[in-house]
Image (cartoon, rainbow, N blue to C red):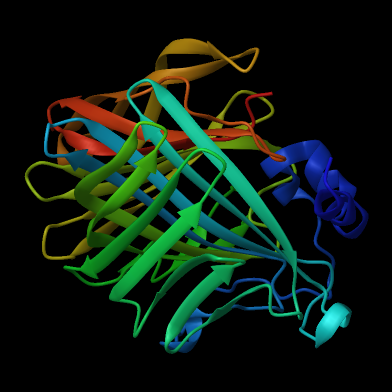
Length: 347
């Protein structure tokens, strides 16, 4: 274990590592802020960090293709978590930063991570001009619509350019996204209309690729209920131009809580509350000594969605300090297309 990871274990609440993402259901304490209904977002400021909330992320996924027609997936995520609310200079900062980067090919999944302490310039986010960085990894640009992206790992790297082709999308009720029957919630919006192109550097060499990217922004202090143990999150882009974000949170009693957003090609949205969106596992893959669902039956009857979602590479396991499954998917059935799937809590 390297020195930076040892330091993180001392600084981070150990329960979060023990529980993985399900630790987001632990009580954050009254000192942290919590999301409230009817948010009034202020841009570009809200593209930046919110240090009075316990957890926050800038989460980008992309479906890519090269000139030969081979498909790839790409992930770049910067997380911020707080030991206490607020910010301070130097080592007095209570903010911890970590990041994940990954590339998925039809027969390989390459992933790596970085860690940093806030307050010392090693990682952070600036709203305008937009810059999110940790070490030499960065997502940055003059604004939130035009960006460059870079990351490096032991066995891969990428450099990309992104250009938004549509508006920001606000999930739930105007960006207030309820996550449980008990009322846990987050602030949640996306930019799902990025065109992306650039170069993947893989063990086989450099590959020019292009495709579509989806950037999620979310922050909260306790986004999950104490009775929730993980989630299945789908971002689906259909060939007819429409998009669907849907997730289900799995309860310890075997039930689920779901939410979805239907996105028209022009950016018009319709939110759907618990029960309207369904995701049922059809087949699993043995990966990292556990069974992980990698084929799903997904429905949103109000929009005629009745599709099968298949992992492009069922072995897309993020074997990192907090492990989870994340990778590109293909869509067949009533609608066709491509997308991304993230699954947590499969221990």
